[in-house]
Length: 65
Image (cartoon, rainbow, N blue to C red):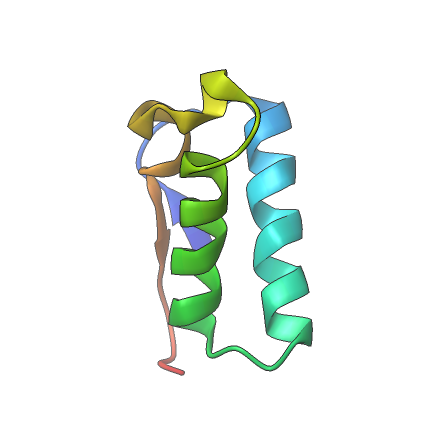
């Protein structure tokens, strides 16, 4: 399960979760998929989402990879 520590922008959440599931589909481990999705937002074209406020609150909980 992916949770966030604070309320986040819905558009950012959609983008991050989309990237996360794309990486899972490619065979990435869950933790790596989330980290890669977060780095994608950090380095992305949408300058607003590059700020840690938008991608940093997401964490993976539950069963391990």
